[in-house]
Length: 192
Image 1 (cartoon, helix red, strand yellow):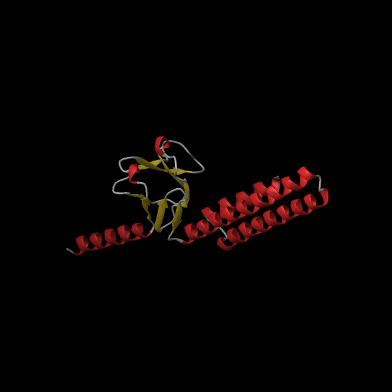
Image 2: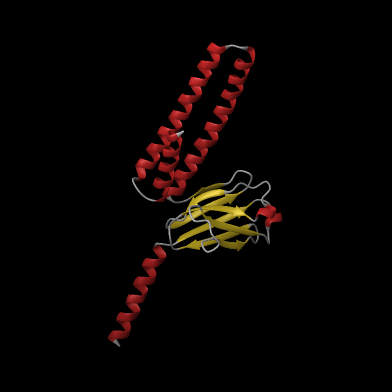
């Protein structure tokens, strides 16, 4: 009897520990036309059919459950992807809440919260650079090289601040999936 209790206790501990390591992605979509369609969790660094997970969207909801941590892209079946944005997530332990829409969103765990902040920074960066690029094109078109150089330098400063912010975000984690991803972004930008 003691042996059976010891085995059961051991199994409970193992199962309990394993559940703490699970990544649960709870997702919603706003477009009810996506009900019955497939949505995919695609590993970013090894995009092969063996690593891809997929589920059918039902009642505007879907979920993925994973036991290993990796960077993944959540994407709707390409036949129905119009008006949806893919979403990067880290399948780290915990519950990750995602919304797939024209602008997709994810949060709920430390790396995914930071990934969302980084995504928001990219959106702001692109808006700033697009406005500035428009100004630059105007000054080039009218032949105002002095102001064109000022605008060009402003664009460099804005991009440099973004790269520094990205590097600081990565360094705050020190290691892990998001750290590696963000440091690759900084390295690629510095090689340009």
